[in-house]
Length: 318
Image (cartoon, rainbow, N blue to C red):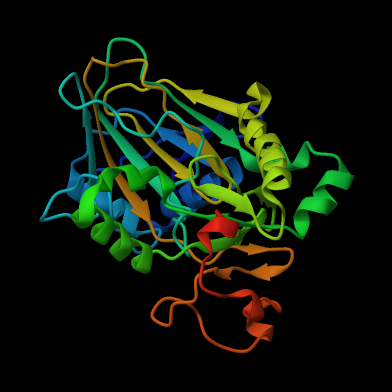
């Protein structure tokens, strides 16, 4: 082989440490291919002792695809794709202490996320990852077959509280609702590279199973949400300064406890744009019909779902 990349598994179902790579320089094609394959196989990869700056992190991320800009997270004006998580007693952490896949309120949720650790608390501040591929595989065949045909509505519900009350807050929220109309994603997502199936609902952004009564939907979602909490399918990452983690957002969920507060924890994040999720029933679409953001075309393009796209009814749909 033309590289010295070493991949060492750190948990049974997801997680691997990658050695022999210096992320402060451009990787060769052979090194990049080895890292890419490790991510596809292990879903979460860890690099230690990576003293890299924001420019180098962004360059590495762009090898995997175009970077996205988070509409609600803190970032820098000159590098909007870089998110700064600098939490301390004056800036408490927000919204990470719940199982989630990043940004599934988007029609095209991220491919993956990269975090670079700069300042780590003396204790606490770990991140827990769960393989939703393993979660799906652990279900009975009967439950798998049932879930394969279902779809769920996602929403930016976590961030609605940021807008506050009053006319200005409501106007801002409506603007973002138009920009991010509720997407419908498959409950079971097929990974576009590996072809594996994974559960693709999360308690942070999934609000309802489509075409179910509220009580039915809540019962099923509560059951599915609990699957990420099974210890056997998890990897718990203990951060160190200059460690770097990259996870596949299409097949994992994560949870970052706030147990370190009020200690300081400073990390820098970039997110790689993804594509429309596909499930056994086909591609996803918007529940809310928006000519600027909804795909257009025949019913066949939407797996027979085009007729289901309509203005959102918050009494029935949320």
